[in-house]
Image (cartoon, rainbow, N blue to C red; front, side, top):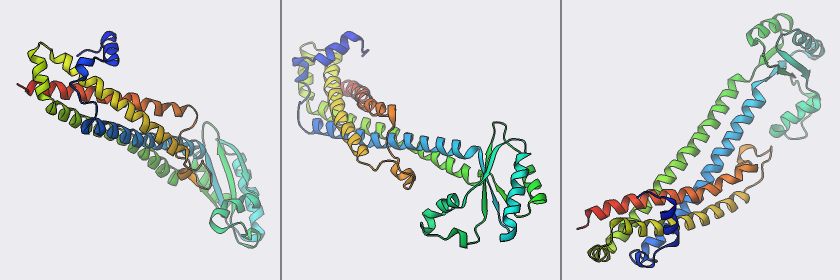
Amino acid sequence: MKLDPGRLTEMLAGDAQADRVVPPTGFTASLTLFAAGAMAFLAVFALALSLATARLADRWGDELARSSTIRISAPEGQLASQTQAALRVLETTTGVASARALTPEEQSALLEPWFGPDLPVDALPIPQLIEVIEDAEGFDAQGLRLRLSAEVPGAVLDDHTRWREPLVNAANRLRMLGVVSLLLIGATMAAMITLAANAALAANAQVIGVLRLVGAQDGYIVRAFVRRFTLRALIGAAVGMALGCLAILALPAAQDEGGFLTGLGFRGWHWVWPLAVPLLAAAVAFWATKTAARKTLRSLP
């Protein structure tokens, strides 16, 4: 059954005689609507998870790829001199775009999520941190470590590679999990609609037999089932998509304190993606119903 524009119009307009073949209510209608709505609701969350983790991976990669930290541990009387020595080394290091020592207020802000706002930074032997930003070329991390060990014995370079890559890999795997979830949701919906279509065909075997006796072609009967089940899937998925979007809107807004857990949702034009869910559900129902109807009609006497 090739769906040209004429047949598409005919399918949407319906056929009163053909529609009698398909029960308008009952178990199969409820199953199709529920399956499409539930799968669309879950698809919205899987899509939000995939997009949110993609943003997270990009953000971690962009923010950390060209930044490094130098940690200086020294006796109180030598900390300032070693900090200045490290800054002089960085000024003459190829690939370093900028470097600056963090202020006590900035270091306190970094420790605040773990130790609270009343941490006495000045009274504790906290190492001095230097923020290093690379240029487009980047610097030789091993060479810089050798220079620092020779000129600033208390300095340790952390280029974030050790813990940046696992974070980005974890975010990418979560994104892949979201894509796999979407595929599984589509497959589950196709299976449930196929079961509903087969049940409807079996329940109306006698009516189908009579239609064949009076000259109805199998394509005519298939179109009746395809139209009913496709429209049911479209309606059910539209309701499920709307409920899923409302649930996403009810989630907490993105906050730095909450990290990823408060950033699950759609941003900007990404809100267009959920609108594709009902259309994809209708396409899955169209394919599943057509396949099931043709297979069942061939098996009927």
